[in-house]
Length: 309
Image 1 (cartoon, rainbow, N blue to C red):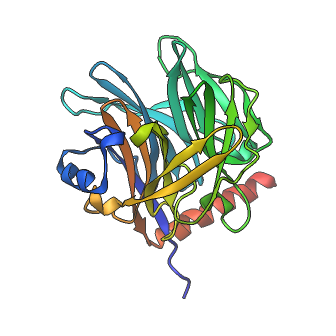
Image 2 (cartoon, helix red, strand yellow):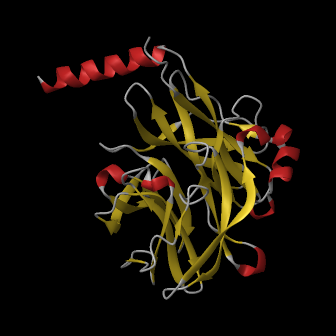
């Protein structure tokens, strides 16, 4: 008998606490106060949340993945912090390649985004274009790391330099076990990959998983995926005791964040923790083993075959 396929489904939640104040116990305490995003629809999911806030509106940018195409684009949903209502999803960025991890941030009075686009073999910088539909038109500014199949690039301005934390696609699940660093004097570069890369090689925490921040003792702290129990199984933090162009010293903190801390059904993983002021955004995972996935995969292969004729 054909083995039932394994399908990951994610959902996004808004936690009423600052990222730098969270720990697993605090996340469990806040479980009943998390505001969850509406479902994306049949055989789709939202994941990789990042947000910008304007007054009582929280604009949440997400990966919008569809199993029928096995590809994702980027969308935005807005949460009213007054009544907890969500807007309908709005398109943000669509390209001929898979997109995810819409790392959005503000700098010099403008809104920027560094999405994950490893299939294009680059880390690219986008800028929001002002218009009637705000944050729905983006222009590509430049490639920060051209020719690199990087995933989940996360940026931070610290001690006069820009820092980028990322993983690299490669054999034997390299992206789940290596952490890389690059630095630049200005946002648009040029960017220099650190000579010590990979600065951490470990299955228990390497691939970036959210917003870098300044933690205890003024040290840079980065959420990373703990992949010991599979992709996206948990999140933990790594802390940089030293971060300079000359040397990097990084260690993993002991606590891990898992899906069961936040949700009663999506208990199989937690792989994003992003900061937005007094709020933290997370995503958690459940695993589906429905045979309907086989039907979707077969139809996708048939469409691809017909398209080649």
